[in-house]
Image 1: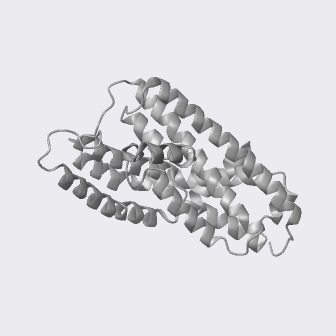
Image 2 (image 1 turned 135 degrees about the horizontal axis):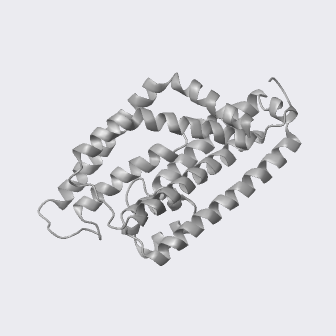
Image 3 (image 1 turned 135 degrees about the vertical axis):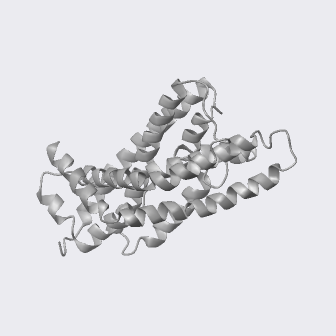
Amino acid sequence: MSKYWHVVRIGIQNTLVYRFNFLARAAFTLVPLMATIYVWRTIYEGRESSVLGYTLGKMVSYYLLALLVDTFTAVTDDDWQVASDIKDGNINQFLLKPMDYLTYRFCLFGAGRLIYAIAALLPLGLFFLWHRAELYLPAAGSTYAWFLLSLALAGLLQFLISYIMALMAFWVLEVSTLIILLYGLEYAASGHLFPLDILPPLAQSLIMWTPFPYEVFLPVSIYLEQVSRVNLVQGIAIQCLWVAIMYGVARWVWQRGIRRYSAVGG
């Protein structure tokens, strides 16, 4: 276990080199969010009742919380690094040393998310303070615990899905197209663009059969207390199931990839 803590420390040190880049990235992500909030304010203008089941405060809170979830769970360039390690032969060392590559990459992912979250604290904190009057606060204290649990599972799920996609580099010379397609699908189906429960029932049902809603939509819905206790427990259980499935797939794909891997470089 100590060797993985060492990886985390090294990851933090390496990531700190790019702390200004993280600060700038966090600040610029607020620009499209401001535009989105402005659009919804225009939609709600002159309306006293809710729209599509959301009050203006809850709709603004949804996008603020989606950004917060994204800050702690989104995969940035980890998938590109995994693909590069395979293509350049850098995984050779992990085939010879007693270190699990999946755990190694997850340690680096966690270190990167930690530093990014710290760097984003200032711009996000100021933005949340600006919208404090519209920010929804859960009535039940247990909601925060459920939200944090769902947030952790969402991070695991996002990491594993991206890791599996990056492992396609064992079979495909250039995986950039696959990664970009995955990102576009995730962005639309995870709830980044809009709350998924405003979609028609059939579209909702189809999307909920995929792992993507459990990356953003479920954690945010839990925080906003938009789910009943039964659906909350069911949602967490499905998140756990998807994490277990993706973990098993990641292990299986790695073993299959290593069998056909031709060690070069490294």
